[in-house]
Length: 105
Image 1 (cartoon, rainbow, N blue to C red):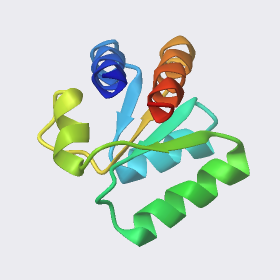
Image 2 (tube, rainbow, N blue to C red):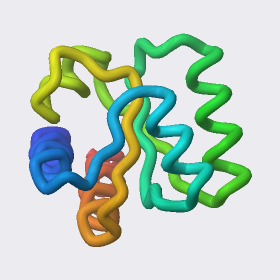
Image 3 (cartoon, rainbow, N blue to C red):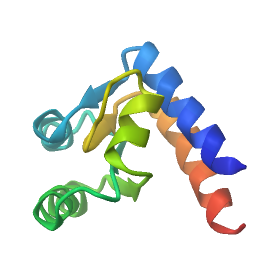
């Protein structure tokens, strides 16, 4: 399943130091134009999704929704994460590729 590949790639990005964890860090990363991809948990609050979504739209960063907060955090070695931003361009591109091919299943 492609979802597993997306999660493994997120874990790889986190281990490589290419992820900003948490709502504030993700927003700051998008605002400072370091983020190449933003990820939000499906169970994040509507306010969090809107705020991060608006920032991503303004700065031209792709936003994807993946799993719940425990699943998202777990794949990156954390207890939970509501939002994260991938700053590594190569890994962000591969994550998007796998995420989009997952949508077709």
